[in-house]
Image (cartoon, rainbow, N blue to C red; front, side, top):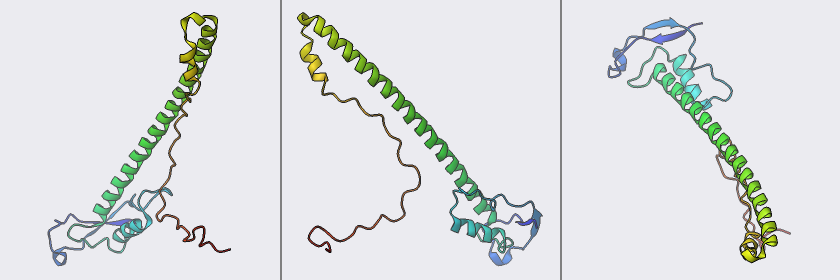
Length: 166
């Protein structure tokens, strides 16, 4: 069954003065949502209500078309966010690769410098090289956890060392 469409009515017209004109149209893409839809289910339910039983009703600044536009804009923003996260993940992967490559080259360079310093003690490089032994190689950055944060933090148990039940 085609979804009804509201006629063009100015938003400032009183609700009682608005005619209930319904024009058939193709099924609304607003109601067809993928499993990972950015529009939360309660909001999808409101959109469905305005696309279904309330399709012929237009409130001053809320109707099915407006809700559909907002939902489409939310989905577009969520796609932009997903692309940005993917770009950040890729950049972090590249930084990790470059850090590992630099660390490997630095280790090899330090090994060569030690051998050279042993062969040429007159240069006095041994003290400078000794300080580099303790310098840790930076770890590659890890990607942040993906997904939504918890709605409610996990509750802490109220027990401390002496209060704990035995």
